[in-house]
Structures are given as structure tokens and as C-alpha cells.
Image (cartoon, rainbow, N blue to C red; front, side, top):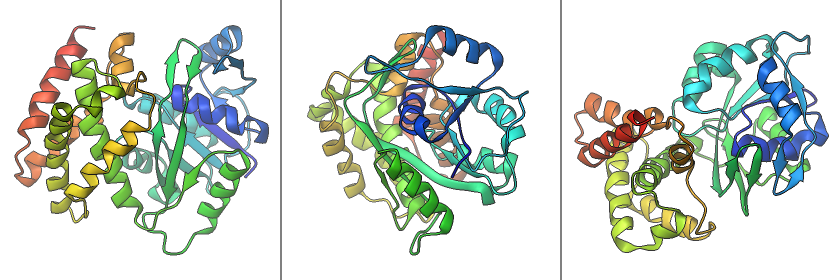
Amino acid sequence: MRNIYLCGLGALGTIYAKALAPFGLRVVADAARAARYRAEGVRVNGEEVALSYLTPGENAPPADLVIVAVKWQNLPEAIESLRPFVGPETVILSLMNGIESEIVLGRAFGMEKLLYAFVVEVDAVRQGQEVRYSKAGTIVFGEARNETISPRVAAVKELFTKGGIACRVPQDMLRELWWKFMLNVGVNQLSAVLRMSYGAFAGETLRGLVREACGEVVSIAQAKGIGLTGADVEAIFPILARLAPEQKTSMLQDVEAGRQTENGMLGESVLAMGQELGIPTPVNEMLVRLVKVLDEKL
């Protein structure tokens, strides 16, 4: 893959932009953002990262791979920025939280272009143009099912391996995607409302709240034919324990930075699906209301 375009220089986007810059990655950004990045620089763990930028008005070949790493509320703008660079053979990979970004991108560009993806075990924090992390995480990605590896999945995996990016291709990608969605619903909302870093999730009371919030996602997933169980909820806690205890979820980082949260694609999505399926979601209803209080303060 030669033409690699990335949209979104948040914590995740910056980490993977650095890894793939030697292989020709270009960051898609509007002229004002690109100028700011060039003027202020981009740093990862104190190291300046040299990146190439591409604005929507420039001529460039269609992308072989597009990586989308923007916030939920910025996805419509990102789609329009990327539109000139998406061709018939472009593969699109979203690293965004939730289970809806692939659907939105599929409506814009065609579901046949999408691979499913998420990142797990990353503890990156962004402050200004500086990103710091102790764990860069693993990209879990693939077709909806991967009993055999498709050529495009193999090509993306080869690229990630060259860039030193840890990655994994599971057999049942949709189940894995729902598992990460469940983790984000249970952990991100609570971390934002309680202003708690990862270390706080060692406490049994907080873990009990995570179990309750995630349990509602399990019920919805099972109603949709996704085989999540209580054991999948328990699998969250060893992962949190391996992250730097002082580091914070992306939602808590948004709250502390005075940015709108992404809860529309997390807790609010749970409420909508619960209402549609007739499944009660009282814990997430309360969490959504509390997060809205934080958003309304901005």
C-alpha cells in the first residue's frame, strides 16, 4: 500500500501517523489545521514527528488506505475532507470508538470499502500538540468474519507490521467490535463523571458499576445475535490493570480539556438500541444524563 491517508491527529491518530510516516503516510487536514500543525509541530513522547499534510483542494492519487481517527462530532467534516481522495479500490479503516462510525462511513463511501477496527490497551494522552503514552495499543481489525484472510486484510496487516504497529485479526470481528463498545460504555462514562483515571478501576465498588453498565450492553448484544457474556465483562479488568494508573480515558480527557464528549456514539447509542428492543437500560440512562450535565457546562 503506497498512498496512505490519515484523518484525525488526536492521541491515537498521532501515534499511528508517526509509525506510518516512513511509509508515505499523509495527514488529511484543512488548510488552517495543516498550517497550525506545521507551525506548532507534532510531538510524541517528547520527540518531534515530521509529517506530510494534504489539504482537500490539492491533487493527489486515490488512497490505497484511509485511516479515520477523528472525534464522533467531527466525522461529517472528515468525510467531506476525505471525499476527493477515496477511489474505487480504497480501503477505509475507522479507529473511532463505538459501533456506528463504520455505518456512517459506509453510507458516504460504500460499505464494501470498510474494514472494521478498534484499538485496545492504549493509554495515550494528548495535551496541545504533544502526545504521551506508555502503551501504544493493539489495532484489532478485519472483515466482519475472518476464517480466511482476505487480500486487503493481508495488505493492511503487512503495512502495520512494517510500521511496528501491534495488530490482530480475529475470526469474529463484529463480536470483538461489540466487546470494545461495551468496554467504552462501561468505563468511559464512569471515568468522565467521577473524574477517575485508570487506576481507580482496581476498586471493587467502581468495578461493580462497570459490570452494571456493561451488563445492559450484553443484553442488547445478545438480542442482536452478538454472543457477548458476563465473562466478556470480566475480561475488561485485567486490561485496565495493565494501563498506566495515572492515565485517563479519552472521554475524561475531553471533559478536562473543555471539549464536547463522544457520548452520542456510546451511552446514547445504548439508550436508543434499548428503547428499540424493549430492553431496560437504567444505569446507562443515569450515566448519559450525568455526562450531558458535563457537556452543557461547556
